[in-house]
Amino acid sequence: VIGVVVADTKENAKLAARKVHVEYEELPAILSIQDALKSNSFHPNTEKTLTKGDVELCFRSGECDNIILGEVQVGGQEHFYLEPHSSLVWTMDGGNEVHMISSTQ
View 1 (cartoon, rainbow, N blue to C red):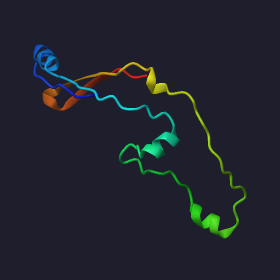
View 2 (view 1 turned 90 degrees about the horizontal axis):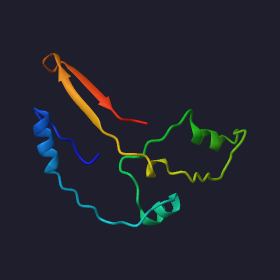
View 3 (view 1 turned 120 degrees about the vertical axis):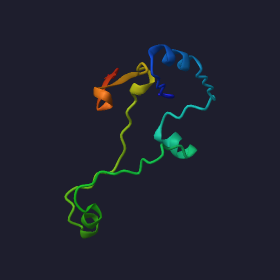
């Protein structure tokens, strides 16, 4: 999604959407984790991790049953060929209720 047009009528929404001008900058493709690391290319605010228990304590205690090291490569890039999505949102009941139709996979 590049932007959202909000209007009071369908005609005004179409007129506003026609005024949108998008310019693209060609950048090199980054297709692997290694390329992203080399280019220092990361999505912002993605420092989230999922943990269960105290992993560091388990490592320090020497009581871990198994420690598996390695990496996995997944070649499919689903987002490269999926069509763009759009949404239509409108309010009812004086703005107290929101209805939404979204094109999703």
